[in-house]
Length: 59
Image (cartoon, rainbow, N blue to C red; front, side):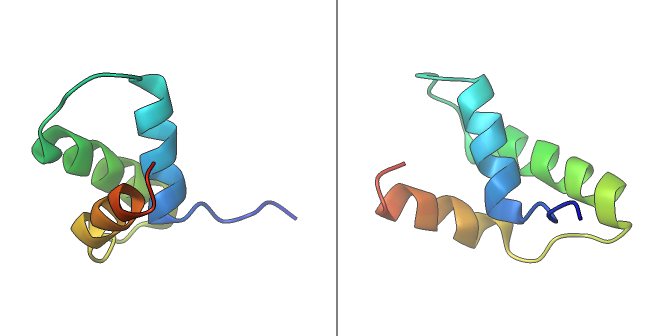
């Protein structure tokens, strides 16, 4: 059975594809929301919170 990708999984995928780049939140959120919507046919909830959480844990 294939594991469902969470918002945090998609964010990590994006950040790993763009290492050491300083970027604004907007394009990251847009990319994650588009991917999530394509996968699950609904808009993700609170992408910003997941970004803040990754920052807080040092990712």
